[in-house]
Image (cartoon, rainbow, N blue to C red; front, side, top):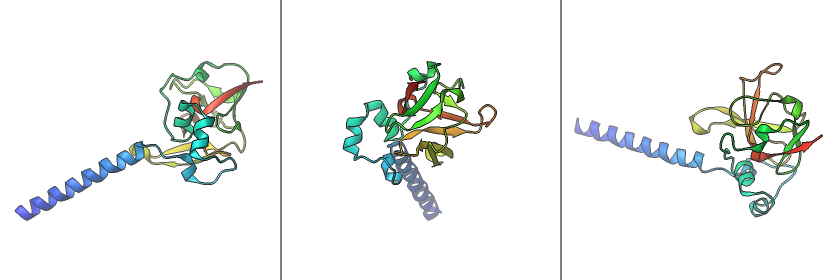
Length: 165
């Protein structure tokens, strides 16, 4: 009985240690350039000089800005939302909608603007959205958006710049 108790404790302890270690890895922020090769590439040091701290944190480390913190939430003019890392047009203002989430939301990206990949961080499977050209993390896409697509591209405002029409 004592050996069985010890084995259970050892197993539970090892499992807890693995969970804590895995969580630390997921939340540490992975540089986007580790995910693949893209048309626009810079060293980590170059990205840090090209981007402000908030842009770097979101685009290159896959962090999320605080809800409601982006001035792009209130942007109502016609124009394009472009990648803050490389300037690639990502979304047209005509596809923006108010989702009530605190992040700029769109129901459709521009053609050939984005890439996606499965994101298993935070103990859930989501679809991560990144810039097709530089690989910068932009946000996530969910299946609870408006017609006609039914999609909600929930984007970090720090990852984009607005270019008025």
